Structures are given as structure tokens and as C-alpha cells.
Amino acid sequence: MFTEIYQHRIGSSVQGRDLIVESNFDPGGSIRPANITLVIGGLHGDEKATVALVATFRECCVARREVRTPLAMISLANPDGFVANSRYNASHVDLNRNCDFNWQPTSPEPSGPHPWSEPESHAIRDFILAFEPAKIVSLHWALAEIDADGPQSTGLGTRMWNAMTPDERAPYRLRTTPAFGQPPDPEGVCPGSFGQWCGYGLQYAGGMRPAMITLELPYDPNTPSRPDPLPTDHLTALHARWSEKPTAYLAAVQPAVHRMLTAASHYPR
Ligand SMILES: [Zn+2]
Image (tube, rainbow, N blue to C red; front, side):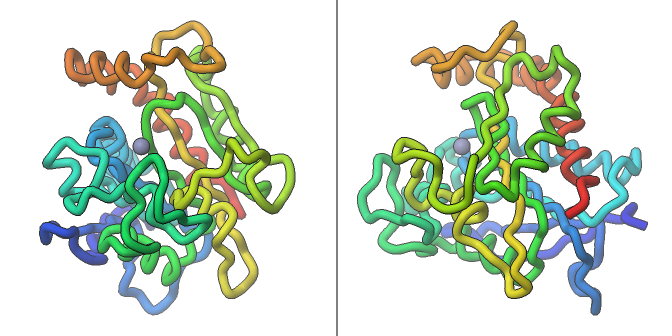
């Protein structure tokens, strides 16, 4: 079981590119599996490493049969942004500010004319509401952290943290939520963010709230410890590292990311 990959089109982008979910269960089957893990890459189109990491993790499911639980993957959530090497979609909207939890018409990043205005965010939302994944992991760069939204996500975040070797943990930190409700402080509110919608705004018909992790890749996989606050040039440093040697960056972060995603997939809820 869970050794075949199914492809399921959930919609299309502003420019008409397919939005594809790949899963190790049949999404057209009569029984929806419980405890699905949904892994998302490329919500920001210029964060190329996240797309490659989800794609190679998908290969592990088939070739190495490392994941034996129901898994759904959207490796390229913003295909137009990926082609244009842009954070935004083709309508210049940040898909990570377009959800309806604390959505604001004006925010530091363009949030769209109204919540869920964009076909990409709309399609991902509808997939989540239909399949009710128990765990959601969305990859980004480069805040270098496991960010667990909502107290129901602490266990999953801790499991992912513990899945790494001490050396692999060095460039990351684990960030959890102390109590249910709003994010812990006003600084922590991110209007319209996907992670906060999943972690705080979403509750399924049966009462479950999904465990939500935003997995922010390190700006420097070889840093001996993650500084707090991050260096002000952390994104510039990462973009330089990526444009010079993407293969080296991927090779450096991939083992820890695969360990974390495998641990997340096997985490029971
Ligand atoms: Zn991002």
C-alpha cells in the first residue's frame, strides 16, 4: 500500500497552468483515508528549493517506500510565480496573504481584492476542505524555523524537530504557540497567511483542527547556530547562495527536510 502515485488536478493558475495534487492514495476512491498529511511547496514562486524538495520527497514514497501513511503533495502551488521567478502569482497577489483569517485589504504584501480571490489559493482551500488533512506542512524560505501554528500543532513540530540530528537542527529553531486563540502577540499576526488560517481559522466538521507547520528553510544550512534575530540580509544571502549553487544548497538541506517530512507523515493524530 501507498507505493503508487496518483495525480489529481484541483484547478488552474491565473495563466491557466494546472494545479496538481499527487498522492499515495486514490483521491477518487470511495473512502477518504484518515490522517492525511498534506505537503506544499512553491506557494511563493521564487522559493525554488521548496518545489525541488517536495518533488524529491515524493520520489521517496515510490522508490524507497519510506512513507506508509496517506500523503498528498502539491509541489508547485504557484506555477505562474515559479515561471516568472516571482513571490506572487500572475495577478501580483501574495498567495500567503490571501486566506480569510485576519485578512487585510492593505498589508505589507499584496493580499488581493478579497480573501480567496486567487484561483490558486481557492483550489488549495477546496482540496483541504474536501480531504481534511490532519497535518499540513508548507515549505518556505528563509526564516530558518519550524513554525507551529496553534497549540494542536506543537506535538507535530516537536516530532519534526526531534527527527533531525543535533547538527541538522543547528540552522533551525522550533517556534510553538502557548495557548489557543490568537497568535501569541500582535507581532505574530500575519494577515491572511495560509499557515495561520490552517492553524487558527480552520476546524473540520468533526471538530478536528489540523496540525499546521510552516517549515522555513535555513538561509545558511551551514551556520553553527541560528541567530535570533536573523541577520538583516538573510534573504539576500540565501538568494545569492541559491543562484550560485542551487545543487549545493539542496544537498545541504535535503536530508533534514526528508527526515522531518517522513516524521510528519508518520505522526499519528
Ligand atoms: Zn515563502
